[in-house]
Image (cartoon, each protein chain N blue to C red):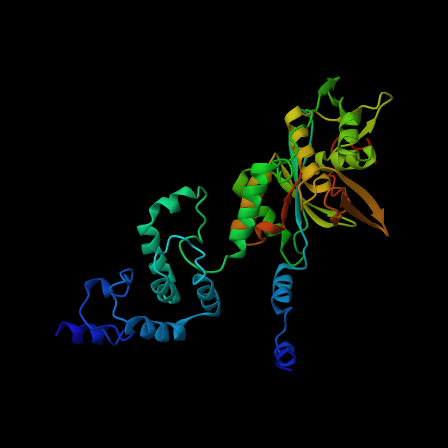
Length: 113
Length: 268
């Protein structure tokens, strides 16, 4: 009988932690950073998956100033807004986003060579 | 008097006939000189402090489990409480036997229960000694390096593509989809089953991407073996290991955003 008593839950929500984490993170949406080649040794960095609440223009402006490159925000019909930067800025973008606190490191996925 | 100060400090042992310097808390090894009533009193106090496991083990001690103890009664009392310190001294007395056991387990100095991690470590050590390949947690070391050639100025040819797919036991379509998604370019399989990719890439780039593919889609996370099968069940991809039988779901390959590179159509 004492076993039964011990196992009756006492207002303890075992999913409390998991829910808190999820809601904070935005349900496991990753930020994908990709790279594409252009002619010669020029390349293009693409950032996709940032949350919609952010002002992409402000982020873009900061990125451009920080890395001394050009960039733009492209509207994709399915994927939403995508940031495009000139050059191979994958690592730079990754550190920038983490430092600015926009994304957590676990949610960034870097693709490409 | 020395007796009374000692009594004040150590309430565990209220009756001490004579001030025996070795009778301080940590050194109880000289039990043979004890007066007759001490063992009984010590035992009475120590049984109060005993945990269940210790009590269980004291019952074995009388059976001379560890042959290094000369006197039975004193062994009994000494093992009752403060087991670690007592047995350290005892093992200090009989050091010959202690050194004879080559692997010094962390629990040998005392009578405490084994910890789960210690037991697991012990099992794996023994397994590794006797049967190294069974306990092998090594990743597959034989992955052939990818051979890439340049075709023209704007294309790269991956020669070993089909061989690699067969070695990994994977569908070429799946691997190709992953490669093209990661590289962000287009490509196709030509007549000789080689992968032609648009762009200029070095073998090192391919290796990195292949390594990522293997870690994600080939290697089983449980046993790290590369003998796995990829199946599609109910619109989900599952990775099933042959050796340990563990099955997990893997994400489908999504292409991602591909920016407009190259010439736009002239005019409109």
